[in-house]
Length: 115
Length: 118
Image 1 (cartoon, chains in turn purple, yellow):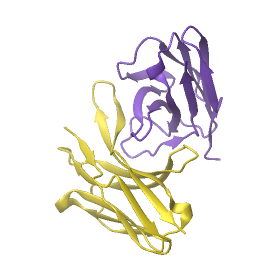
Image 2 (cartoon, rainbow over the protein chains, first blue to last red):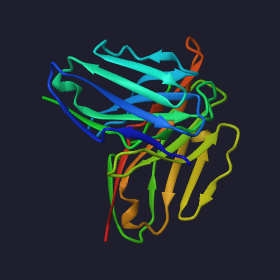
Image 3 (tube, chains in turn purple, cyan):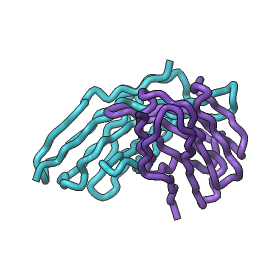
């Protein structure tokens, strides 16, 4: 099973709301990633978790708060977002984060609209 | 700095034509990995291939083939006899080691949108 699932598929939220995006994988991967993708652009890395510890935070604003409760789950908590945060949020996993060679498996994404 | 360039923003072909997507990279590392991903309209990126810097053999997988040339720092992707289902955005990526964090991350190219017309 090479599947990464993400919920919800679509999310519309106001600037004062708090919401969470969820990601799950059952491939036994030990690295998980959050990306943000704007239209007609490549994915931008936001966070990397390796063995459930945050190893990369690409200077993401604090209104985005990641959480990795266990090796299969990854959450992204959202609070006080801005309209420019509207984008496709992709989750990915890989066998590890220390290996240059590991391919990443991506979920279908959550399309977020901030009003 | 590491960089991946996909100069073709958008390509349109008619079904059954062959098409080549270009990828040029820059790196100072001697060991590195290159990847191709496909992003159909559904959104998820699908892994297609990985190539390491020590293996310059070309690879063929069905209608897909890849040509890796270190001399020109290129890793080009050819689809033979294209089909409408090949319509997608294709990204080339280079693995970059982040020593301070002990992890790696991808440097993505800007992507090439391929439209295959019936």
